[in-house]
Length: 73
Image 1 (cartoon, rainbow, N blue to C red):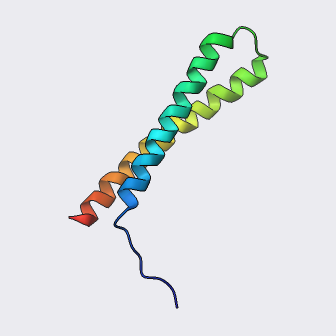
Image 2 (tube, rainbow, N blue to C red; image 1 turned 120 degrees about the vertical axis):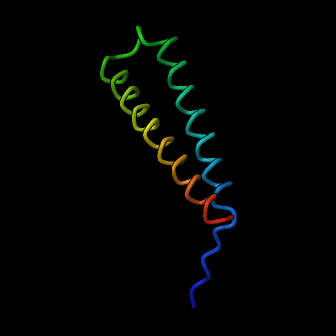
Image 3 (cartoon, rainbow, N blue to C red; image 1 turned 180 degrees about the horizontal axis):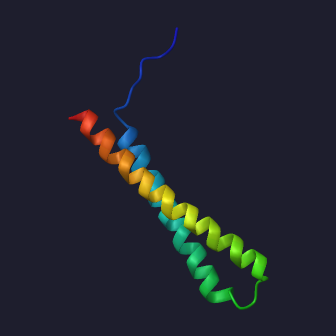
């Protein structure tokens, strides 16, 4: 038998994911600022692309948080 869908803590999980993703984004930006001139162009490009994906993820998480919050009211 499957467990019932418990969505009570989804907003908390999503908010934690946003915070974690923002931290990773900032760390990558700081790394690029400090070492951008010293690392290979390929690595720099990979970090920049990953940060673009992080920005999209953050946006998506925020939309999910809004959606989940509506369902909890």
